[in-house]
Length: 169
Length: 257
Image (cartoon, rainbow over all chains, first blue to last red; front, side, top):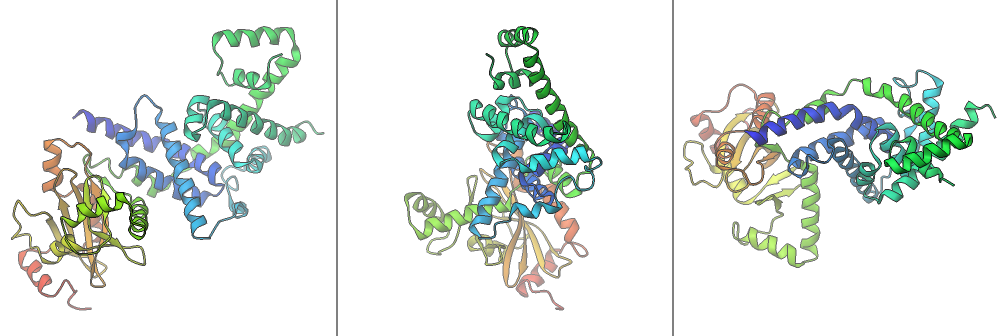
């Protein structure tokens, strides 16, 4: 049957996306455990809403958005429960073992961690995940102009943090 | 003067042909502009490189199976119980502060189980009498609980609102039963008798606007998602007709515990 054939295909596409979903979620949450929880919720949620995915829209953008919304929901419910995790917990975060093979890689990641959430999201979607501006703006539910200005500021900040090391000044 | 945002968009390949042309001619005239573009490109590559290793990490099995979960069962999807919890919270909030939408939902529910004050979980077009206990478990109430407690597979008819599938003793020591709710929005689930209540452990729902063949499938057979759970949890073999009868007499309390 046509529809089930398509949806089988989507399941495998989601599996193929998992590494990127985890990477995006880590940039979002700055904590690998939270990231996997959020991806799990997002995948389950996406599977109940496959009918809402329009195949003309990129599956990656659609899934990134669900991941992000799941994280926003999680943050809200944590706030409700008065148990707000502080980003300080991100001590055991991304980039400690698998990624931190060179100090340069680590410095990019720690520079990213210093960005305000809005800029980190924009940089993460465009520079790390390679989404076009339009799709990244859709994921974040902002106009494209907002996306580009967040991206520009995020880049500037990264440049400032990394540049001072790189150029030795 | 070309703005830095435009140079960034150029480096990211976001400009149309005319704007690209303008940037390129400016780059030819002014090496500082060329440098700025080069910096944007270099940063992009540096950030990409810093995150590329993460793609090579092994993905946890739990995520893989979540992604494949429904793949084996087109026509039945696992309902996200966290969403369900949120829905129940919203319903509860409406119940405390009565508004029109809640009354509409309540009126629908009342036609099924008049006069019993219960929380309802509306999934698709199916209204399930589920309440959430203090520890977050989903407890079947009303007609769903009645069917789980009383209905024997041998006795159920085509017109039964709830179809019981398999009944079995789980490794946990609890009796569990699979059930299916035929209708416009068919769903299936697994419930286990625990602490004198039927806890609904998993729910699946069929696709919206399902056609006749999907309806029949979801209504009369147990989806593979549920069967996998049964396989994982069952101790021994499913109960036969006599076993069901004995378990019912005992109020679904395990014999030797």
